[in-house]
Length: 176
Image (cartoon, rainbow, N blue to C red):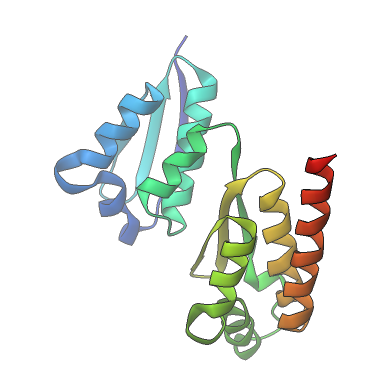
C-alpha cells in the first residue's frame, strides 16, 4: 500500500533538492525507493510503499530544507543518525537578542560551531531562525545540549568543558 507525505521546502532550497539535471532527486528516489514530486513553489510530495523509507526520505528532505547539503542529509537513511532542529527564536527576546544568540552559536569566524561539530562528530547548520544538527545518536544529544547552553547564555569555555567532560565519560563507559 502506497504511503504519502507532503512537506514544504523554502524556495531557495528547491534547486538544491532537485540538483543538477535532477541528480539529487533521482538519487533520493533510488536510495529510499520512493517517488518525489516537487512543485516550483516548494511543495514536495513523497510517495512509496515502505512507510519507514518514506519517513527517512522526509527527514532527509527536511534537513536539506533547513540548509544541509544532500551528501550530509542522506546520512539520515542510516538508523544510527538523527536530525534535530533548534529554534533560536525560542531563546531570543528581541531582534537584537536573536542576532546576538545566532552569533554566539556561530562564534568568531565559525569557531564555536566548528568546535562543537568536531567534539561531537556532528554536522551543524545555522539557517534562518534555526540550528540544524545531524549526527549519531548519543553524540547528537551532546551537540544539542551544547548549542542550547550557548543559547541560554553559558560561557563558551563552560560549554566546551562540559562537552569534554561528557565525552570522557562516554569513552570510559565504552572501555568498560
